[in-house]
Amino acid sequence: MADNNNDEEPMADGGSGTGIVAPDDETPTWRERKERTEGLSRLTYEYFERARREDQDLRQESDYVERDVLAFPAWPHEMIRNLSLTSFFVGMILFLSAALPPHIGPPANPSSTPAIILPDWYLYWSFGLLKLGPLNPELSILGGETAAEGAKLMADRTYGVVANLVVVGFIAIVPFLNKGSARRPVEQPFWAAVGVFGVVFAFTISMLSIKNLLPIGSSLLLDVTFLLPFVAGTISYALLRSMQEGYMYDLNRRYYRLRPPK
Image (tube, rainbow, N blue to C red):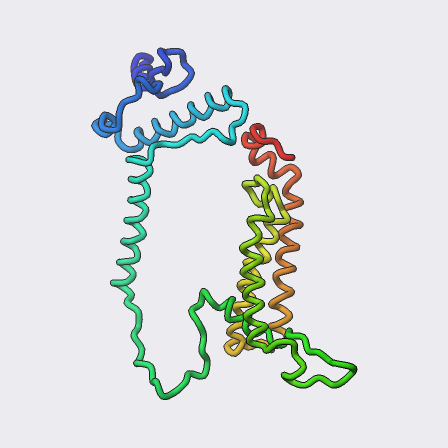
């Protein structure tokens, strides 16, 4: 029985016992692996075991492990995996399109305008920014009374366009402001909270764009649009700050031995 176990798990590096798989000069090729009878499970195990051994050796020899890249060749390893995943999802889409075809409604009447006009759902946030007319400040010159439109610095439509430019500009500048090397939200709670704020704001401003379809008052919906993102961001920041002590380091003990927190 002992001889059989030794045959199934040969020593690496000439029998030194430092790993399970053979070194590079003794590693079988892809075609030789395919011809084996152990099956895909054994093949996968050997690849992961070799990656583990190389990862361990590299960490013992290298001083700066963050720039050391461990990976398998793109062909055939990564390509076969990606093609398998792509084929699965394409098959699911084809199945759903064949089993559940979309309903085709009556043709549009060019002589009548719909009561509610909305863009595609993924543009609701931008359409909601065009409905910030109540936030457009009015001006009162020399103590005079303000008019409905004449006393505004810019028209409501222009105000909505400027709001789009401000939001898109802020999203574009965030990567230049956050230059840290954090890999997890818990490492930088502030920027993680900013991301939560942006996601919740996109949802609430989308709700504002379809306010005609929601059973909520316009003033209350406008307050919720700007209040809920701040609440969600604050809660996220507080939770991530509380997770920094203890939980994060215990969960990622191996990671932080290589890259201790600042």
